[in-house]
Image (tube, rainbow, N blue to C red):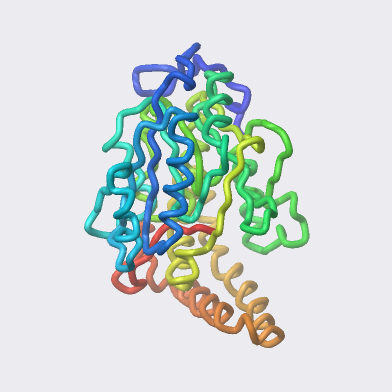
Length: 349
């Protein structure tokens, strides 16, 4: 994690302003909720219902659903809630970051909560997140504890990626040495985090605007890590609040087009490492891509042999790893060839 972990709120954010030394209490600040949807079916209604149930307690002014050209009935299921929800249709699959940005531009409240449609915030969660922001004016973004439908805590925060850790990751060493993995944290108390998942987070609009918001060049994956790293560098803190709970189904969009999702993940990874590790670090990591994909192909080949029930997933992964080794669907500038990968949406697992 960068030295900004303990940075002062007076650190220059590079936009002609600095993170505020004090901030108005979020308890009196209106809140907007932005849900990025893509073919989520009935999960979208459950997500919106959970938000609306906390409208008065959390000072929730509006709920905006940004739809990435869904082809299912998820929007039609929202019709009974038409008086309480605004729907913004993008007309195309813009990816998670650009869709979330469209939602931010359509709202103006000092606080925003951004979430996947397969996340349902539990009672008191929004208030707990807002309370934490009120108590720490240097905190620009905060994430809740996410639980599986069965109640298992998901590892949804962690330390910021390091070059050494990522090099080890290319050799899958994090599978035997978990401390090398930048994911996988489950804190039991409120504390700073290098990043929190984009599946659900609350942020100050001023903090997001200070760092330029979500990176529109990232179609999906790593936009949350990138945003949190930039917030830390700008002097804002990112925190994890396990006292705020939300249920997260996870993997909804990913399972629909797993092969395309995996390729898009590697595309975003390439963009991230070029941006944060410099040309030399990126060159090393991208040169090691075939090594990682060969190792992953070996492991998932074994999975396909041993567990027949997972053969479908294994074959999709093997196709994706082969494409990554060959560079198919990945351009030199790091942008995905969407016409070949098909329509993809935000990862939820």
